Length: 137
Image (cartoon, rainbow, N blue to C red):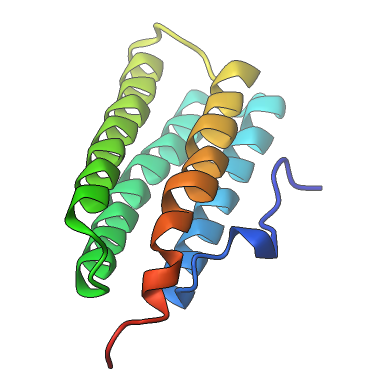
């Protein structure tokens, strides 16, 4: 059973972005599994690195789609700022882990799922969903 499951109510009306969000859920689930299976540091580090890398790729795509869907500039800027903060936080988690200054505790998973995935998708990402339907071909 997954630690966190994708649900249809998380859709943002973009197949590409929904698939990317689903992949981020899968990476967080891999991290959860690795933590509780006491996987080696290199395995955990690889999963964390995948999360950081994929987050950057996803945010770039999301921002491009928001711009092309004519998402309001003031909302776009706030969203971009939130992305930058989330990337910094995930990079910080990765760096602390690699330096041995922190471990991958349930608290980190709660942050990744609660504050990052679910809160961001359900609050900020849902703002652009109506604009995805209005995109010109």
